[in-house]
Length: 150
Image (cartoon, rainbow, N blue to C red; front, side):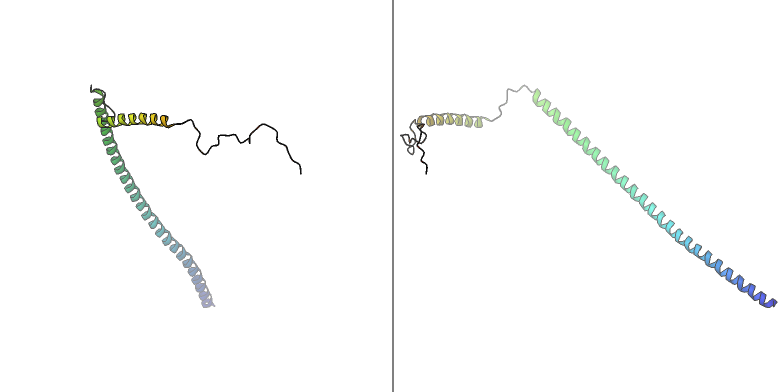
C-alpha cells in the first residue's frame, strides 16, 4: 500500500507540475510577444525621430532660401527706389507722354474729325425721308368715331 500511495503522490505531483509548467509557458510566450512589440515600437519611435529631424532640417533650409530671396528683393526695391528718385530729381523739361511723330498724327486725326463733323452737318437735311407721307392719315385724330354694334 505504501507503493500505491507513492505512485499516487507521484502522479499527483506530475499533474501539478504539468499545470504549473503550462501556466508559466503561457506567460513566457506572452512575455516574448510583449518584448517583440516593445522592439517594434522602439524602432518606429527612432524612425519617427529621424523623420522629424529631417523635416526640421528641410524646413530650416527652406527658411534660409526664403531669407536670401527676401533680402535680394529688398535690395532690388532699394535700387529701384534710388533710380526713381534720381529720375524725378533731374531738372529735365516736361517730358511728353507721346513722341513727336505720334503727336503729329494725333493732331492730324483731330483736324480730320473736325472736318468730318462739318461735312456731316452740311449733309443734314430738314426734309423727311422718302418713305414718310406728307399728309396726316387721321389715325390719331381726336374726332369721335362711331361705334357699330352688332
